[in-house]
Structure formats: C-alpha cells, structure tokens
Image 1 (tube, rainbow, N blue to C red):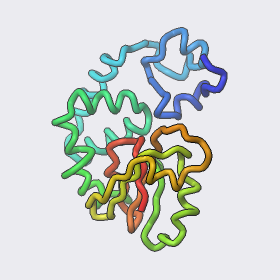
Image 2: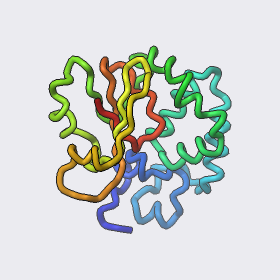
Image 3: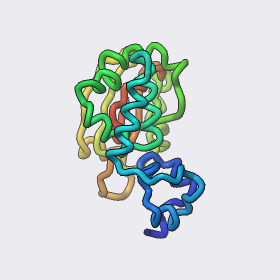
Image 4: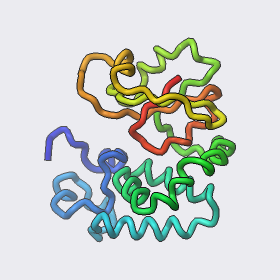
Length: 195
C-alpha cells in the first residue's frame, strides 16, 4: 500500500476509498482496520445484495432517497454498483421525481456536506467560494436552480478557469443552488455544480 493512503477511521471516513466489509484480511492489517469493521470479509456482490435488502425495507421513496445518499456518503463504490445493478428502479430515487421531494425536505434530511454551496444572495462571492471547493481538479460543472431545473453542463476546458496549477483531470463534488436549500439532486459525488 502507498504511504499516502489514509489508515484506520480516517480511511473509513473517505467514501471514495472506503470499501467497508470488502477490505481483505491483508488490507485490514496493513491499513489498521481490525476492530473497526465487522470480522466478516464480503465481496462487492455480497455487499450489494445486503445493501439492496436494506433498500427494499425502506417504506417510502424519501426514505429510499435518504438511504442511498447515506450509502453514497460512506462507500461510493458500493453506492454506484448498487445503482447500476438496479438503475431503472433507483434512478427516480436520486433524480426526478423523488429529488423534488428531497428538495422540499432538505432542511429535515440534511446529513453532511457534499460539494460546494453557492446561494443566490452570495452570488458576488463565487470566486471566493470556488477556492473552497472540496477537490481542486474539476472537469464538469453543472448548474441548477433551487426548484430542481437543471442548467448547463460544461466540460473541463471551460471549467479550467477555476483551476489552479495541475492539468490532471479528476472530478470534484460541488453543489449550487440559488437559495442554498436543495443540493440533494446530485446523482454523482464526482460532479461539480456551480452557478
């Protein structure tokens, strides 16, 4: 393992790196994960089956949306695999129409920051806010309004105005709404949204 890979709880708190119970015995030893995870090592297929069973136990669409967002916030590989395996069933939970309900309930269901918020009243400070983006490299910017209407998608060359330094292209997570109320329509943690 590389020396710059986080260990222990720091690793488990990084959704893009956390594999949950799919960490092997050797990885658990090397990365200081013994005791921080249940002892059973599972394959990704086993994790997907367990996650889908938990998803099916949710009683309504908003609960399913919250469950999927929580999964995305803890284990992105599992989230995307579950979504891909059940794309027709789950797309409405992370996009239209359920995201509209999630927008209405955002202040009640907010769990943790994901991305970059640029509320309309603070639109004059966009450059300052963009400097605080969670990931320095951006290759997609999607803008949207608080009521859920999608704006344009801009590929990396146009987004590079906000880059500093490196030409390496990885996606970043950011969300923007004129009111700052409803960024929950993100279907990918690796999409940058800005006004």
